[in-house]
Length: 164
Image (cartoon, rainbow, N blue to C red):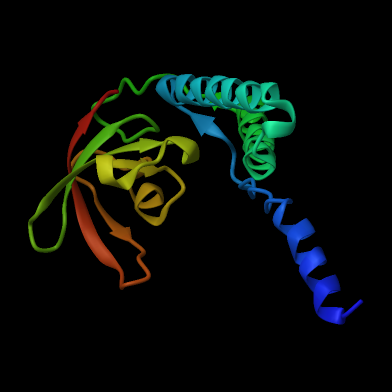
């Protein structure tokens, strides 16, 4: 047998094993909504896994392996979730707070500090441990804070804090 065939066989076997999703070392703080989203994701993955498994020999083996990997990840995230109380202060930024800040050009931006799994920048949901989240967390109304960015540090001013 040629060496090329052996390598192709090994490559095919490795393709069946998806790369594990890395679990963050930061605490898994979640908002009540973030917890609900994690629970829904686990339920969705369990349903999809059951559907694939029910196909028996006709099941898509790669899809099944991917679902099992994702299930392991999200079950671990759900098990380590620490629900933070809903933000109630309009004076101090907490996880769950909606924050409006002004950048150096005076442009206003509105974001909510959330847990890692709930973060979605396109919808203004920012991980509390991201550079922007770290700059805002604990800030008070009218505070000027330093946002340490890879593109260059920027001073921003907290102009509004809304409870969740």
